[in-house]
Image 1: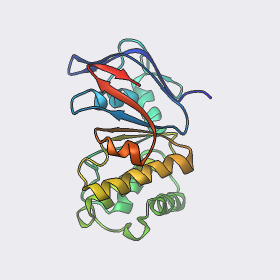
Image 2 (image 1 turned 90 degrees about the horizontal axis):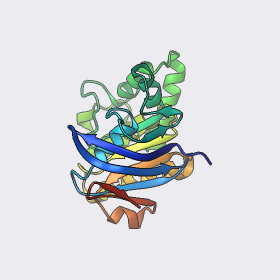
Image 3 (image 1 turned 90 degrees about the vertical axis):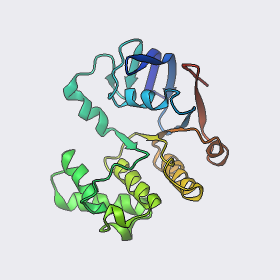
Length: 221
């Protein structure tokens, strides 16, 4: 089975300093992978290389069919359409309802038919248990509910890969467990590869997956 992500001898930079060196790893379709490490260990910088926010200048790196060492600026949006991203701080548009936040993404990624957009939004909201909250504003939702909307947003374009960067960092432990359970279930039921950056070792016991550690500027299995 061909890997979705394949890195060899990659150097990951953060603000002109080396965050990780000699990174070798691959992620297969449907895998659930943890990136464990302390704050500042390079987890976020590594994730940013995967969706081409941080360039790869050394080594070999491929995500889907894109060579990250040679990717052209106009190809980056097409790469990102294949990747769902879940941020710690939600990044929902505060002046739009949950539904409008999702509709904005679909329109921005080329969905022209309004009926098709509405059907897709209904599907992803049901997936994350938020079908009854579609017309709430972000400030009317709890942190856990906002993060479920963010997961729904990540699922909109039927990605093969979801990247979740400290997705429970702003949530209480019980709500954090619910969010991790959703991500784990998405990986299992939809066959989506999920990479979760976290420093919470408890998740590994409750929601098993492959573990990669960022330590001493190295990525270790």
